[in-house]
Image (tube, rainbow, N blue to C red; front, side, top):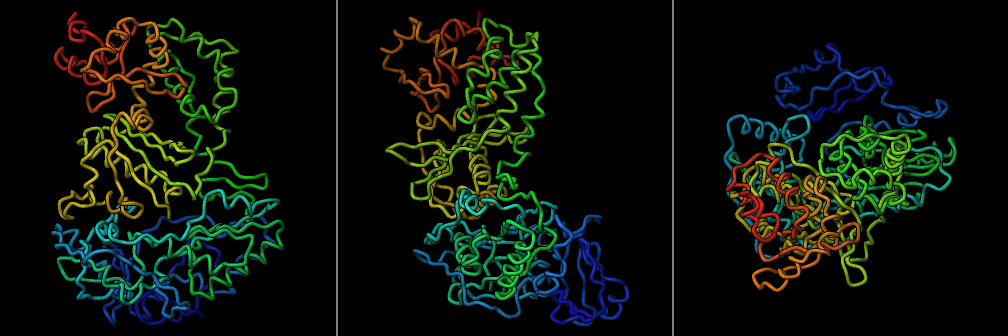
Length: 627
């Protein structure tokens, strides 16, 4: 006989079979006894007596066991049954078993906003969600002087999660300096460990109440009223720091446990020892009123994924899916495809040992080649070198981790076809790159305005580097000046997509600064990865050293020629007199550049001249294009 709490404000006692299954099943006899109605269309269970309801999701049936163990002698199921409360999906604990609270210290006067208008469908969804949160005491009605607009965030399944657009609140919030663990910290607990578990905490933020005097700052204004949160909500700037401080206190003294926000890694040397460690962790979590997400937790296995790593008894390495695209890379059929592949290797060259030696045969194919579509006649030795290059990249180690004592920055840029970013730290009086990111834009994204592409670049870069940036103070640098005002504009001025992206970014940093394009060379280069892959700037740099016209151009005052470093260590002369960095093209490469640009979309003469002038410089471009 179990007491089931569905969030309907009454306990439902019923005999259940305890089974090792992924999802619990409620039978018709249970629903009939307690007069519960299932509304499949609206995905909710309605209490026929009180008219209260709870929302749920339609879940695919799975044949997988929720608990997968390495050794059946480990009684994980029995261990979980020892703490029955810990696996019950209770959103907000009826009894808070700790005194931790979330504080929102701010500068300036209260911020306020107008209620955003919603279409009828989204208005109905918002009302249902707010009723659900009221019934579960997640929120309460408010008469606050503060207010942030309602934002409906889209979840992976297409449904919506209501939250506050806290951009302005986050901008006024004083940062909490409590450190979020560095990624390399958990490596220290793995020595000689052979069995692992990972616990995912259920709705972890809801375990922490907001300080009574600070609840007013979380107020959300809607078309149907003003509400404030009782518990820590999504989107608040210092929520990760508050939670990390709390979970550290909960698990203090447990040496083989590594908590990273709502994920907990447990590592042990032997099976029996692991069972003891698990019991200690579950006991602590139960004492403090936590709930765990059984379906997302993994128990007693030899290999486990954690924070982007695959952890095994032999050590840890980046997840295989991170390099699967490289391992599946087909052998290039022509020079253009080979250049693209070598461009990838060049991008990761600091990961690769003896890269020049191991790529020598591949670079031989590029010598003297004038037609990018020329077929490659592969030799056995060249094929072996191609496969070795793929394996070397797949087995490469990551760049060094950031030093939390050093200033951190994120440089981003977006071109017409891709975005690029680099995380850097200030060391030895200069910015040193510690991780890179580039991503090709899809057809829809390529049609965005410049502002939206640059904003998307920041948003995707922050998401990609989340583990580096979480809990750190850092500055975002962009060469698109309008973005520096993004967190100072009126909240209702942003389009829904912009609001969603800015709201997410504000949880990490609201410090955006302008940097001239000429000083943003790394991110700019990465954002033009599709162009770089088919234009060999190393060869252009070599040719520049012998070009007589370049020497005469250096005396022209209307140009601002500077040398910029390439990843290979060579230097490329570029003009920075406009807002764009334009490489100087020697005579030997001008026809090739023209065919490359013209072949992208076959524009007319005027459009081609305009496009060429925006990307490159050389004397008489107009005349050469017209020939």
